[in-house]
Length: 206
Length: 130
Image (tube, rainbow over all chains, first blue to last red):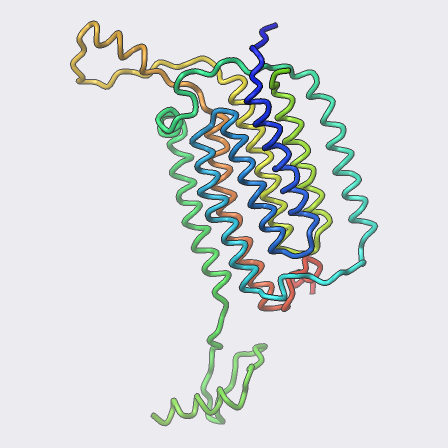
């Protein structure tokens, strides 16, 4: 079997980044304060970018930093700041047993998968000269993945529009002006009935 | 001791398991979304690891038509103009793009849920049930 010469630097980098990634992932799911969870996710993502570098995927490491650390984590932090104290959910012990059962099943599935990796023995050989560069990845992207690339662009556009539409809310209640004054749409409770009524009547006068 | 693909696969499986457990356990919708990101990242790591350990044969690129091709020049170009398969990296590029879209829409839904319920507990997201 082919056996590559041992590369201590790569091994050390792998161990360090793997440890940071594991600690970051555990911090993400275990800490109570959502801001701390976001910081754990941030370190997890940084470590994964480092792991991509050990795998020779420079382009994807940069993309990971730009998209995840630069956009997704910042978006999470924005939403946490926007929600304020409501972002932290109080302790609640309802439904603990089903959740623990779910965790047990997830852990059991993971443990069942792990031994199979023993049979996949591949060693890292010296990588080709231009492996993972922007030129190579871009060539492949625009040659064999052109249509998916365009489609993912449209998907992102639709996602942005959908996020706008969902998050914008409906601040202006539809008002139907009748003879007796202001009647709101059926099923919609006026938040400040007197104020909106007076506003509407002022609007009618002018 | 050398790096094997098994190291990366075990790490990715453990990270995926952590993400799955977080998604199942946490009641905070924000942390549930973060757990989804953890799982997607684990899958990305697997894809990139397989791509690195078995990239496949190089594909020669066709020379662009109309280019003046001297004999020595063409030979020099043929040596450099090859395409190394990056299928796993392309896959994980798309996974990252879809994950960004999912985070945007998911956080918008969380904000919307907060408007209605004033909390972001996943237990309270039962508006369709009532």
